[in-house]
Amino acid sequence: MLGYVTIGVSDMDRSVAFYDALLAEVGAKMMMGMDRIKFYGNGKGAMLAICNPYDEQPNSCGNGNMVAIPGGSPEGADALYNKAIELGATDEGEPGQRIPMFYGAYVRDLDGNKLCFYHMTPGA
Image (cartoon, rainbow, N blue to C red; front, side, top):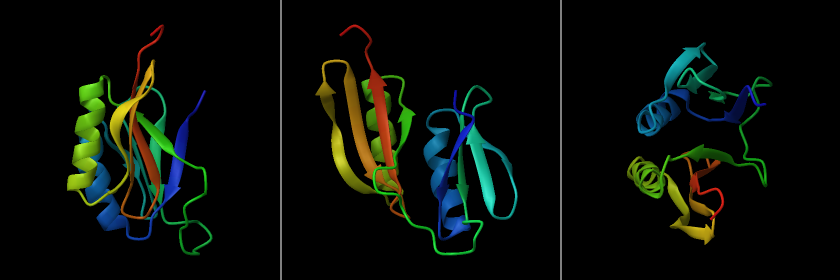
């Protein structure tokens, strides 16, 4: 259903370094890019794009907006959370079981965009 999600960043070089290292943890890489926008994916399904806003105004985080990245397992969600923190992200909720079928961990990236690393256990 989704093609891609775009989040605004303030420093493209800094953000590329962050997302190159973070998304490599789940086998994703930059698929294409131009000066103001870069698209990350694994060639299957939706992509995540980081961009300098088109209107050339400062980026801002939407209240309630969040990008959720599957970890593949609770351990994978933990690894993404730990990698993001190592890369300078800030904690928004340590890894843990939230409800019986949902394990999640939350951070804010270098620009304050909220990310969730998760694993769903259907039928749990």
